Image (tube, rainbow over all chains, first blue to last red; front, side, top):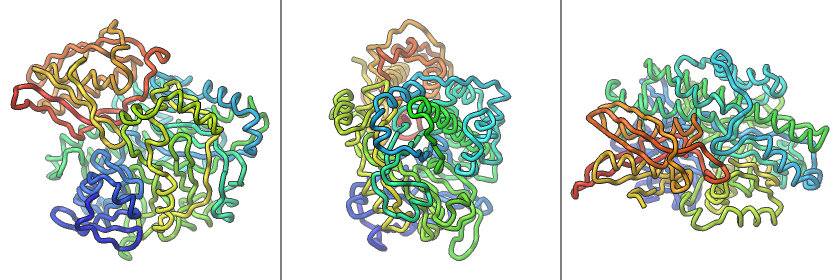
Length: 476
Length: 138
């Protein structure tokens, strides 16, 4: 990134003061090498976001920020509805409520290593993954509506998991004010066979072990014990969310002129929160969020069943489930004033600090768990929200490593089968229906997640709690 | 080899089709869409799906064309390899020929979530050839 006109405020905070159409500053969190490696497009996109109507405070880019569509991936922006604030489909992303949930088991790494092949085989059999895969569930129109308004609570009512799970999910498993009526028939059709499926690309279900604990007190509070096994699931709202993203991106782009919104780029398509289109999108997006929460709940159930068949008696307790592609209504203090804001996080994770009411009671003193997915075969991290994050980034942190290489380059550089063999030799079993998919997701095609997480911690956005290393990875 | 290509875009991928006519550029870009998932040469054009789109803006028409294909790929669990496209004014009519996904044979790499407005362009080059392109979210 060209650093001309960017002020370095501290080792990890870079500020672009408002110029031209910008209404607020743009703030980027990165170290020297991350900011230099960031695409100039991130700068262009984050300053474009800073020019949108009703934006409050600043437009933020997380340490893993990269070029997205409209908003950068790793972008955070909050809008005030009372000041003409907008909601943007591109500010949420196509995979609405894509997120990570982590389950804590009472198995040791050795317990799993003994049955690693069998467990990998069973999980690959039980978890529908990849292009063309379907779930076992077929929803009637009435049940689809119940799922879209009920989220993970609906899934629990249907027998997937238990009510204790719900306390450890963002919004206790169900986001309010979902509007199934705002969803197209196409979106419903795309979801018909996709409940309880993982998807493809960088989505995965991974069996991991706690390889390092950085903060013993918080780790204990989260139930993370060195040497024990956890399971992390990374996926989103499947075809339903993708179609809602498509539908509303189009509608917002076509209708923006009627709202008098001048967009520097059509891909920034948005609508005033206080407009029919803005309200319909919010209702549809919340329904897609419930779909993602229900989907991860069903996958959790399938995963628990698989563990029972291979390692009977294992408990898989839900640590937390948090989305990283979402727009949420939240209260934040900006310049000393409490504001009700619509916070977009696209490829960014909410990271509330200790004491926040939205953090489950059992973990409230530690701060909200922030789940950071690695790339296939590399480490993942559990962080905890910190008090300083509120003023720095509206309580937001990074979400993952971020790609450093295109899919095309990755397939030229790596061979899927060879990669699977190499990782197996290192004790990581990959199960995927597509070897080309494996090559495209090669660990080397991603940035170093450790560096991203370190910068997030040093910048004061979150605290490192534990590092998770993979044992089995089921991919689409 | 058709006149299509992919272009890099961060985590995602761009598709670009070229042709002597707008219809051909749209068809070539659709082949590039399939090539994100699998080698189009592996997809047998044995079943036809009719596609219709209507919107005045040619760029939005292209966006709608690719997204309608994404919809059919997802709901029919199909891949397409041959396209007959006819654009008349604000209306697109097309036949997409393909077959059901065969995971063994096609080894599909990734599912396409949707076509985006990013790098969206439909234009005629100085030499008269047409280009249609945009970034896909995968």
